[in-house]
Amino acid sequence: MYQPQPDVLTFLDEFEGALNGGTIPIRTFNDSELHELELDRIFTRAWVFLGHESEIPARGDYVQRRIGRDPFVLVRGEDGEIRALFDTCRHRGAMVCRAERGNAALFRCPYHGWTYKNTGQLAGAPLLKDAYGSDLDKSKMGLHAAPHLESIHGFVFASLDPDAPSLDDYLGDARWHLDLIWGQYEPGWEVVGEPQRTVLAANWKAPADNFSGDDYHTVYLHRSTTETGIMENPAGDAALWDGYHVQLGNGHHFIRNMIPPEEPGPRFLGYPEEVQKGFSPTMQSEEQYEGLKHTVGFVGTVFPNFGFLCFPFKHDRSADFVTAMSIRVFEPRASGEMVAWTWSLCPKGVSEEFRQESYRTTMGTFSAAGTFEQDDSDPWMSITRSAGTTYARKVGMQVDYRMGMHGNASSRRVDDYPGPGVAYYSVLEEGGQRGFHRRWLQFMRSEDYPPKMTPEEQNAGAGVPGSNGGG
Amino acid sequence: MAERDTDERDLRGEDPVEIANEFAFVRVRKVHTRNGERLEIEAPRRRTLIRLDPLELETIACNFDERLLGPDFKGSDDRGTTENGR
Image (cartoon, rainbow over all chains, first blue to last red):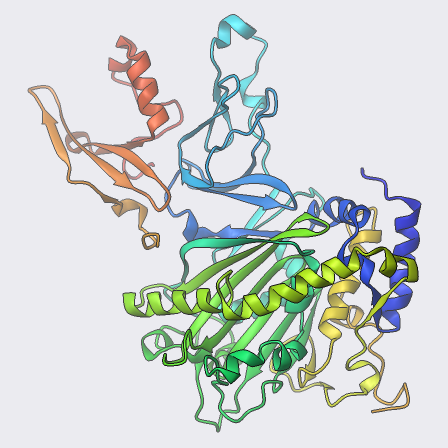
C-alpha cells in the first residue's frame, strides 16, 4: 500500500480544520504527493464510471477507458457479459489492446503473441507446448479484471477494491436521482457518436468541484453566452439561481432546477413531444414521475469524477431550444493535468433530426469547442497554476467556500424538496462543494475502505441559521 | 458520427454472397458492429451462424487442418454456434 508522507498527513489534518471553517488550502488543487495518494486511496477504491452499454452493443465491441491513470478495456465478451479487463499482458506486461475502440474476439499481445479471449481468458501463446510443456495453466493466466462491475440504466461503473460496497450502497441517495433521470424513459438511452476528450492543464478536482454545486459562476463567467443571445433562460423570468442543491451522501450531489406546476414552461427537461410521450408514470414512483415532469434541468455528480448535465440550450442565437444531455468524466493524469470527457446522451428511438440537433447542442456547450467549456476550462487551469505556486504553499493560501454557511445567505435548508437528501433552496450556497471535499478528505485519510457518509455527515459544518451572527 | 445503437441479432452489413455445392451451403457477409467489423458465416440448413474477427480468420488461414472438418468443429473452443446460443 502507498504510504503517505508525514507532511501529507499533517496537511490533511489542516485541511479538515480549514474545511470546518469554510475554507480549503489551495494546495489541494495541484500537489504531486496528494495526487499519488488520491490514485491509491480514491481511484483504486471508488466506483468509477467507465462508459455506457450502448457504446459496446455487440459481442466483441470494446472501448479503452481509465480508472485513475490505469488502462482498462471495457469489452462485451463473446458470452455477452461486460468486463473491465486490465490492459496488461500476464506474460511480460505489455499492453494487449491496440486501439481506442474496436471489435475483437481476441486480443493479442504484440510482444510475444500471448492471445486472450475477449472474456479475459488466455486462449493460447506461440509455441506453447515447446516453450512451456505442461507448466502453463491457461485457466490461471487470464487478464486481470476489475473485481466489481455493475450497470445502472446502462451506465457501467467499476471498482478495483474487493472490499467495495455494492454500487447501490455506494450511490446512496444518488440512486434515486439516477432513477429519476434515466429510469423512466421506456425506450432507454444511448450515447451518440464517440466521447470527446480534451487534455487540460488542470487538476481533476477543479471541474469535479464545479459540478458539485457551483451555480455562482454561471452568473458571471457564462454571462457572455446570454449577452450574445446564444443562451437564454428557458424557464423564462425565473432567476438562474432558482433551484435546489441536494447533498446525496457519500460525496454525491445534485443541482435541480424545477418549474412550478402552474407555470406553462418546459416539461420533462424541455424534450420535444416525441420524447415526452416515452416517459412512463409506472417505472418509478409517482413522486419521481411528477418530479421529472417539472424538472427543467440538472447538474449531478457521483464521487469522485463523474458528472452529468442536462438543460435546454441553443447552439447558436438563431436556433430553438434543444435539450442537450452531457455525461462527463474528469480523468486524472497528473496533479496538474486531466482529460475532460464528454459523451452526448440521447433518448433512443427519436427522429434523426432531433438526435443530430441534441448532439450538436451538447457539443456546442460542454465540449472543447463548446461555449460553456471554453469559459470553464480557463479558471480550472488557472486555479491549478495558482495552487502549484511556491508563494501559495509558503503562506498556506486558503480559498473560500463559506457561501451559505450558518444561514448567512438567502439560501435555506428546506424540508419540502420532492426527493431524498439534504436540500437547500436557492442554489446560492457552496455546501455541495464542501461536501465533495469532505468525502475526498475521508477517502484520503482512510487506510481501510471508508465508511458510508450520510447526507447529514456530508453537510457537516454547515451550521444553523444565525449561529454566526447572521441569518 | 458513429452509427446508431444496433441490435446484435440484426447487424448492419454488406450484401451476402452464397457459396454452395452438393455438400453444403453457406451465406457469408461482412457485418459492422458499432465499433468494428466481422465476417459472418451463416449455415442456414444447420441453423447456425458465427461471426469471426480478423485474428480468428487469420488463424484459420494459417492453420487449416483436417481436424476442422470433423463433425464437432465449432470454431474456437468456447464459442457456441447456434443463433440462440451465441
